[in-house]
Image 1 (cartoon, rainbow over the protein chains, first blue to last red):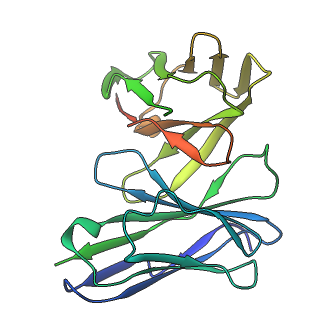
Image 2: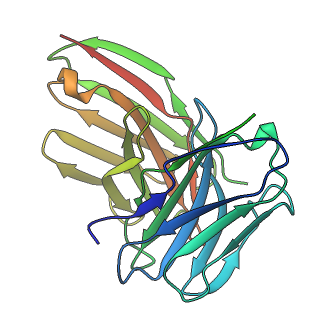
Length: 113
Length: 111
């Protein structure tokens, strides 16, 4: 594809609901990243995959957050029992090589009511 | 822990003026530094990538410098235009591949 795509673009959830956010990286990109961006702030790292291996999940804020990339391409970020503080934009990025630029998707804007 | 700071948080200039955006980071052991542009409600667009061994990168009206030893990078945008209005973010990559972002500088270029 031409770039990183994410779906849905917008998601409204009631507190306590589970949500699943999808990321399709650029074809051939080995590494995939998830970031969380609160309003008016810079993105913060959540987790990172190299192919299907999750190499770093140190940024996941709680055990309600879970990410997977089972076949080394598409990734899903799942948030269980959503809370209001989970409201943010969730950004996905991919790179083809360690030294290359990270390319970002448009993000999923999550609002938890 | 790496911390990235961008000053000022917001900047307003008349069209045609040059823009100077500053980024500082606390740990100089970086792999590279990347500047991004973010328009309201949109994702991040990569502008320039500077490897740790480089001093600067240029693309059109954009020039970014890197002084790793002092933990600083500066993004220059020449002859600003209203279309340059956006939030500009810098991010550093250290070991582990993840990016650490600054809080961004919101730029408004007035016609």
